[in-house]
Length: 171
Image (tube, rainbow, N blue to C red; front, side, top):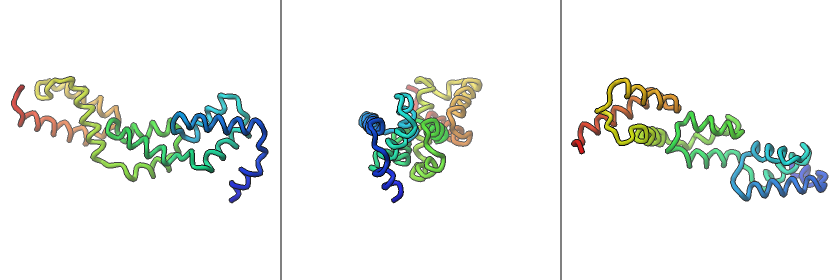
């Protein structure tokens, strides 16, 4: 309620109106976090008062929602990146940790294994895992762990991959 009154009572001077328009223009291009809009308004030269007015304005109408942003980001990238990498990317974009945790409630563990399989496929570049020597396999494992996957998950997917290669005839 107080936020609604502040939005209506706020001195909607020319700078505040221009800041709100700029925020709306930014949101027309793509979904953004509150931090991203604040940063963009600051870089555009708007005062702190005008920027805060614009943030309240777009938030009031539901145009900015960090939870929605995080859920969409996770949904779109979950088959390409590890959970840890997704969390880091969202934090870089200014999404608060508690919102990230809430967004991950719908995250499926199988999606991380699928992302891990994709990374392994990409890393093998058409080679067979069974044809590689131990240092080459260890190098791939280290790469996947640096990408944010757990050692247990990496071992499980590599074992699954090796088992599948054993069942499939050489091509």
